[in-house]
Image 1: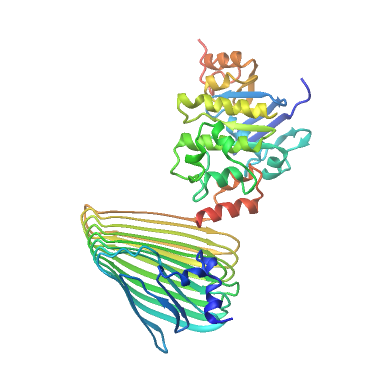
Image 2: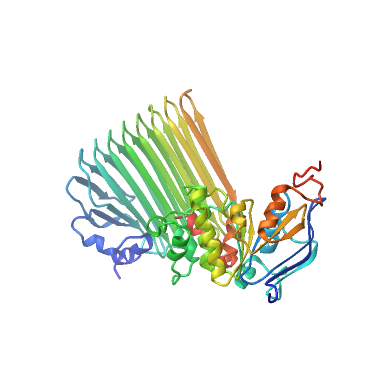
Length: 311
Length: 242
């Protein structure tokens, strides 16, 4: 089996089909380690990526005023048990352009490997980027996954991100996102993580509401079982008139897992407002008892509640 | 009347040093709708939680037989598998769970539509909604009743099923209660609302943890309305002697 086949055959685990690579209407990049196995661009999209011994490096530009109709698929991963992958990418969504990126991070057989993503994302005035990142890991754990990104949202720009890690055991995950939002801009960051075994999760998301009437939402859902650990930090700072932010973190802890949530909200303008809510604990007793009163066993009830939270 | 479906005898439950249910007796028969009326704090909801086996609700004395089976040692889901269920006064919200999933309870063969129609909700509009904060209180109550109905229970405990329901929709709730009976089930109907209690076959008034009056629903409603409680002398149910 080729490396390309080894990676793309697990695409369904993150909700995509291998056939997307054959569709000429759909832009894609497939990277194994520091090699680019497949790529395609479409009208209005420039993909300037190159292979180096240390990283896949480059820039993706959505040209001004262009709407990329089909999602851009970025498939990165390792087809082998060990290895290292670093992606350094600048993403520019020019003025009034719109794009959706589906990033698939695939590590089906990794046992001792590293995946590092360093992204600089610049969303121009009136532009919009929806970034959905799905991870698939095998059952072995042992990975070190380090996605870091800095996002700048221009006047009236929009950025929606949705990170999910719902299958397999990751090992160690260290997410660090910083988002700066200008006037009338919107940033919504969602993350859903199901951690097992000895997984270690560190998630830090910060939204800086710099511009007037800027909006920010950080929504995190983490379920932990076995010996897993998580530390979730959601930071929102509001600096301008009419800025509004909210941090919403829920962690469900099962078995001997442990979790902490650190919502940090700061307001530097009298007409700005930031709210937060955080809940950590076992599955809600009333939800559990309600489902058991309909005949579900405790295990079935927990599964329904957890799968809903992580949806 | 044949043998009772639910037979509660001498049931006693205390929280701290306060007795919530005091040597409580009640029998409910198959296909019977029994209304339980009582002032706030009289012990109605505690009784519901005890019967369902909710965590922390273990009686200090008494027996509960359900279709001849001793209910008290059983866990909630074991009681549910016998055909007993409870609709909470304040139903739980489930983030991310759709109405379809909630009503189907993981059974792919289940058709949740008839139960939704029965409670007056359009399946096309509601099946893909989430059972979360986006539903109004009234909508959530109706979905809770649809969930109970879809179980075809032998005994449904409905705790204030019409709370938060507008007057125009009360008939849907009454229809559900009757539908449970039509399916061969019995209902323990905990309610403050006289128009709902009036559809019962029998009724009791609970005060200070004990049944103080039983009989025809009309008489019990009148008794409850008149606050002619002889037991607590008005301290609990509000009746003050002239």
